[in-house]
Figure 1 (cartoon, rainbow, N blue to C red):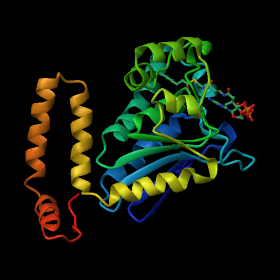
Figure 2: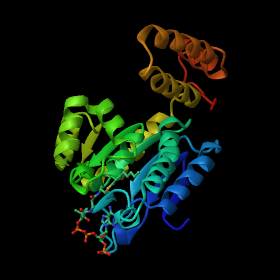
Figure 3: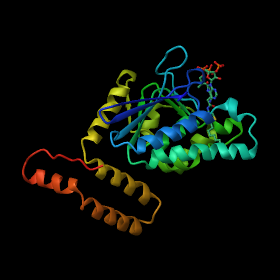
Figure 4: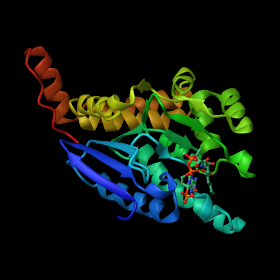
Length: 264
Ligand code: CO8
């Protein structure tokens, strides 16, 4: 891979978007690589959580940028058809981040602008370093957020705040992003990866199959009416009750011992 770095240890993958000369902006090649590597990860039983972060800039600053957007140099001459194809190219790996069986955590280490904010929003959980900046600057470029931003931002922070951010293109800092529910946590820069790793380890220590099914229940139910959503949840609950982990987890509780949860 030219623009991604994958490191795996102790069931946790750290996936770094690395285009130092372009503040990790997403071009077609990076989106193709992302799709490929997420497909590979989804098939791996040794990875339970993926931490997505940005690599350093060309001066080696690790906290300059998470992802500074889609690649403007690539988009500048797009026809309408090419632009649509580019949007669809991103939507495939973005939906993988959202729906894959592994949990995905965005560790946002600097600029998360346009497509950068959008890829973070496609992850299950967002942790930001205290210098992170978020924005949807697209309307200032004469376009709209096209990597899911008009949809995911409204779902995360509500329609009024999403409209304000998208119409004004305002930058917001990490604390404001936390206040409006765009990120789960804000931590000092030097604690970002440690915090993400700690959360990932905690998730790995739970029943991994149960976590995957809970993720599917939350995602699938979100766009359903409550009656059908709760029925869907009951069906998935039934599936988790047929597992080794359910027998082991409940027996371990009753026998006052640590559970050995192995399903995935
Ligand atoms: N695309 C391409 N190159 C970029 C991008 C980008 N989004 N962002 C930064 N770069 C490049 C710069 O051109 C520069 O390259 P070079 O050194 O060769 O001149 C290098 O990265 C460093 O950037 P700066 O010199 O500008 O660094 P500064 O510290 O001065 O500024 C900023 C940092 C504020 C982040 C600034 O670079 C900036 O404003 N970048 C653009 C941010 C932006 O507008 N992002 C949104 C892009 S549009 C988008 O994401 C749309 C998503 C949906 C697309 C849907 C298509 C269907």
